[in-house]
Image (cartoon, rainbow, N blue to C red):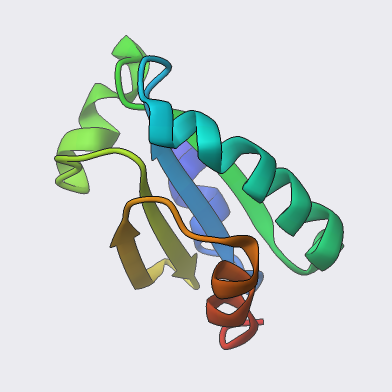
Length: 100
């Protein structure tokens, strides 16, 4: 969890995707996140966190993840945006542009 905390404290926005391998909508988010990474390049960080991973248990509980996919944007250690469910690339890019 220390590495996560260190990453989200940076000036660059961090998009966090809390997902599960068994989740259909989470699988649909993967190509959307790939496209977003291509479009936005190194202006943002994108990380994915498996909610079922034993090492992620504390992180999932701390951020009160109750449904997947849950997307969050962090900047300078603060969560600035959160939404559950699948989003289209254009919508997500518009949200991220506010924090770049």
